Length: 74
Image 1 (cartoon, one colour):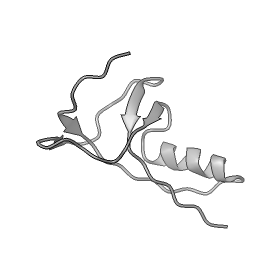
Image 2 (tube, helix red, strand yellow):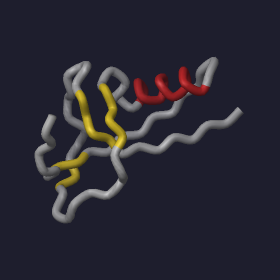
Image 3 (tube, helix red, strand yellow):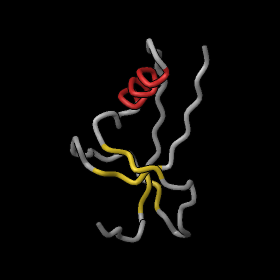
Image 4 (cartoon, one colour):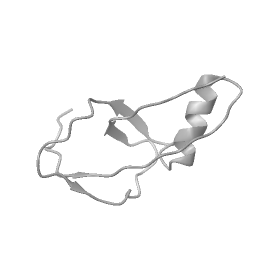
């Protein structure tokens, strides 16, 4: 699987509760509009010149390189 150079990036955020930390994380992804895609975690560094765009529609099941953070509490 090859990667094409990054020219655009979108940001989103979500928060949620759940019966387990994993369930809460999944619910937060759904709230952010990215719950039905496969996230491949990358570092948070974007190349120079990247254009920030609104979150596009992404096909369910798509493999998407993603920089993300999570915070949990009891």
